[in-house]
Image 1 (cartoon, helix red, strand yellow):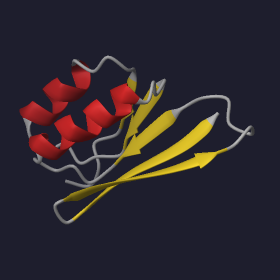
Image 2: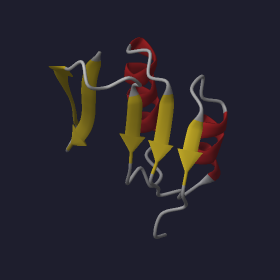
Image 3: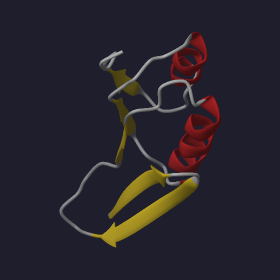
Length: 84
């Protein structure tokens, strides 16, 4: 199995990978999206390429576009509103 950490820093997407036999499920954790649909689309594409099984979304829902992208995800999304 593989642990993949995807992080936005400024305008750059960073993907860190680590091999491990201890993980049995690929989970993506996304946070602080606010209203940046463009970055969310790119993150979802990276998630789909890596066969992630679940997405945990920690907010923030700042608009309907973000909610619509998550609802239409190919991967099940578990979400909280965040602090907005």
